[in-house]
Image (tube, rainbow, N blue to C red):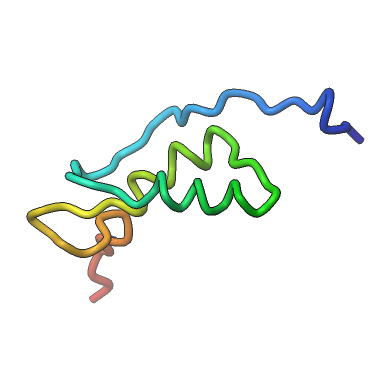
Length: 73
C-alpha cells in the first residue's frame, strides 16, 4: 500500500472533456471551502468543479447539471 509521500497520482487532465461555455462559476469558492476542512483538493477535482458549478447567461441554471438523454421509445 502506498503512503501519501510516495503515492502515484498520474495524469490529472482528461483525455476528452466536453463542457458548455459559461460566464461565471462557483467552482473556485467550492474548492476554497473544501480546502478549509483540513483537506486538499486534487488537480482533477479543481478541473471538474469549475464547469460543473458554472452559470451561463443563456441558461441561468447550473450548466454542468444539464444532461441530454436519448429518447427510449
